[in-house]
Image (cartoon, rainbow, N blue to C red; front, side, top):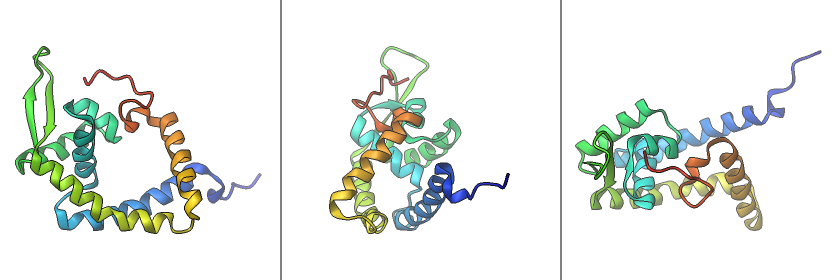
Length: 157
């Protein structure tokens, strides 16, 4: 039996798309001094409110170590603040500052051309279908990345 053409495998296609898209995102975010993980962190905190580092890592789909690195840079720049959890002494919560929210919005604008380029092969009526199918796949593989209210029942720890 011969090996299957990799382009017939969903994982291969997702990986290739991810690699190509990530390169575009990194180029678009570089002038803002943000990595993709940092941008995702600012957006998640802007949308979801105060979260622990562990919950941020789950929602951003990165390792705890990568989230720690992303947060260090954001805290140093005054874009995110750390606060002790009001009742759980060992938990440190993260919240976005006004400057962090503003930079997240700048990132959104910077990434719009990437979004348009990626969706260009699809008719306008197909674009929401693509997003819907991708969200379903993500929900099956990493539901916390969809944020609260999307079948995600985490307590912020």
